[in-house]
Length: 248
Image (cartoon, rainbow, N blue to C red; front, side):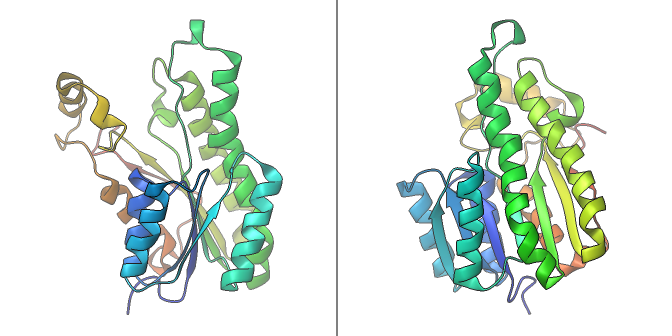
């Protein structure tokens, strides 16, 4: 029996990288997949096609996670289409990296609105259906820089640190309803974003990692699968660092 048979999973920002890997991993384990993206581009449609080839039911929704009303409507539509939301993966996020002394108010607001407010919006939207069914797993994508900080990423680090505090609070609030909430803090993960880095920069990062390699989106998706499945039924309010020991 697959680990997520019969479960409906809502994943935000699933067109590429970690979101895409998570959608495919969950689909391969029998989950029904509802994925969101801010635009209906070719990558977004391709993920849906790949999930369908794995034999699962997939629906895609164009939605802006930073918009509160839009997030409520998406959750309602997913419940209407699938009958439930068993797992939420808050994955959507952006970066606007620059030093604080030259960071604009817009760069700060954009990152906080999508990365942190987006997590609030979707979590708030799924609370009612999860409470009604008295079960659920909420998985929030944070980052190791939300724990350690990083020069040139004060906005991103603040948003990811906020996610950790939010995760722990939600776990305390909703635990009595059998709803779990955990965070994943990826480290240096090799995605489309890191492909743009120079080889010497990549080497500098990997040299700092005890496992001596960058992580893959599948490394993070595997952690998400564990937290989404019943194997983690007694785990809530935790932050799992998927970083190859970088913060050890």
